[in-house]
Image 1 (tube, rainbow, N blue to C red):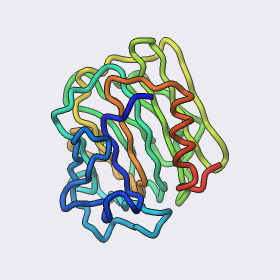
Image 2: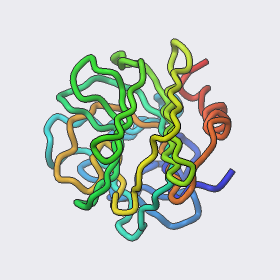
Image 3: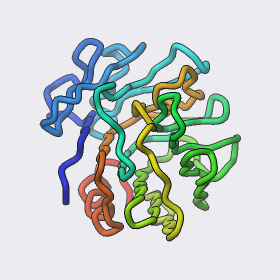
Image 4: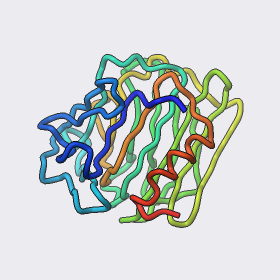
Length: 229
């Protein structure tokens, strides 16, 4: 399995307080330090499920987000794995994570409306829907892969009710201009679309398309943190 391009952890034991001023350290070894916006040390919850970061966004602009560095050139192939507590949707649409740089390509994971299924969208047309509707205060892990080389997409959600998986062929999209990647934010776009989550970890692979079994392996390492089967 390839090492992630970006690895942000909020579990205790990963360098004391997960926040270091206005940044979050990158544990991948690649030096891709995250930029933290409007989050202070009191919002790191070290005693909640071994460590979570509170990201309660109540308006579309100027809120609590994390952005990966601008210097990463987004590839057509990418993978992402994220774990969090879904507190509630403060508004909609609601973007948990995504990439956008005002170019022709973009992607996001989230929900369009209250009570909507969680979706993995690419370029405004590659909308892959799960059968999962988020339950307030419940814990989830999401893994997604855009394999443009093999023209395959994987979208998996681990939840208390069990695994929700969508895998499709002839459904991957170019992503070379997708730009900056964000957490609780639609990449580099101005709006962040009001998610309210407590995040536990974030992994992103640039220019790497993980397999379904590799996503499962990652989830097996984190599932005990979130109390998932």
